[in-house]
Image 1 (cartoon, rainbow, N blue to C red):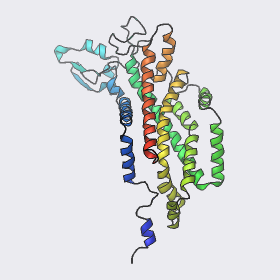
Image 2: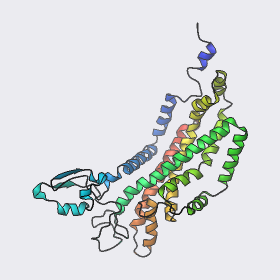
Image 3: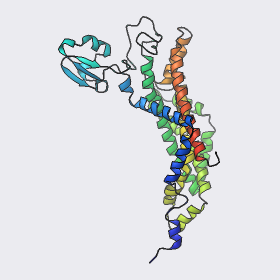
Image 4: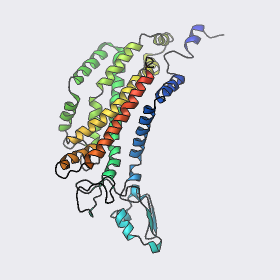
Length: 352
């Protein structure tokens, strides 16, 4: 018995489903511009930098043979035999005649290691410190490398949290309507009535000792309304379309339609907003750290280094404490914004 022609026509490739060919076309359109590819490469490099920060900057070696014993990646394991030693003291204590040797990371300083041999603090670039040191003798390059992990983690985790909240609330409000839509819409209006920075400061001020985790959660819980409003609008736009009506006629449940058809088609604008959101979260983390509400000292973050630069610029003229973290923040925000703009253009059929 042959299948129903109506069902056969609707089932194989519904117009509401996101196709692999469409994804490839979007990717090809995105990669046309060299600036998009460059920005994506910068984001990938920053992500890799954050992942392997301990391999690039550490006060412990990557590999060392010390007094006849081989230690593999002591910079990660921190064995008891080497706990009180750093790269400099290890190098002085190695018995080369006994076969001792070591391989140090490219930046042989940890983000919290203080160089007691320096006479001037903060120390300008040079004297073994490529980007100089801060007022306590900590290497700026090491702190920048490890600060990438903190700043990017805050941006990515906070954005993931508020995107998930926004998608869930916006989808429920836009698809089911009624009381759910009324409640979500009023909550969005209330949240958007407060300036974001002032709301963040007010919430963080109630925390006795703000940490990076607190910052991620507060950012995630206060920035979801924009995503929820966007997803709600997409649900209202897509719900009357033919592929939704066809799915409902074929007996699909509301949750199946919402999960398999509506959400995939609403993810394009959300992805663009999330990309811009990471840049905004990195800037917000830096601003909050500068105001004393970000990552608590001595945690290495780009905003915390800028805070120290503010104290040192007038007296010691430590320009390197402002220039290098400022460039890192600028490059990160610019890269994510360029990628977001590129995705927006690639997903918009009206863009030529």
